[in-house]
Length: 109
Length: 114
Image (tube, rainbow over all chains, first blue to last red; front, top):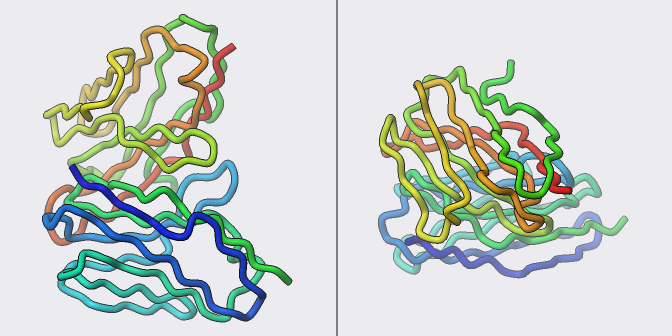
């Protein structure tokens, strides 16, 4: 089955700085890579996703890159704000989502 | 409008007393999933239905079962809940294999075992 590794497990950044989270996956059949933000007690919320035929995607302050050859993908958040503080999960899917372990992001004001 | 609906939002059950969680969808998606999420952990896939085909993850305990009587509904049955089964249970749906495999999550059911 798919194995997704996510680093770092915790990340503290100063407001306005950038945050980067990296993930690797094992199954070459995975073709869809979403990122979720989860606040305490709530369901995971999709913030951005990328498909295997695309190398990079950007949505305002959030960008994701995918290196299919190396089987790794990354989330970049620029100009971080306090409301970006949450747990972020990467996932890889061939239609079954396998999640990384999560990164707790804290944005310091 | 809610597209994946889970009931109840909060469920308290006694140790060993069977409990059923429900999920319904208005998206007409082929695939329905059940995830278990314990505190400070990632969601863990328990099983999924691709249409009527049931797929169990290898490490899902026998205590957990699922039913999908039709496209719209899926149930999670816990036969004899233990204290270790206390968690958030998330239902999700997707179209299935293909170019668009975005998963839509319900709000979750938080299960407490007393």
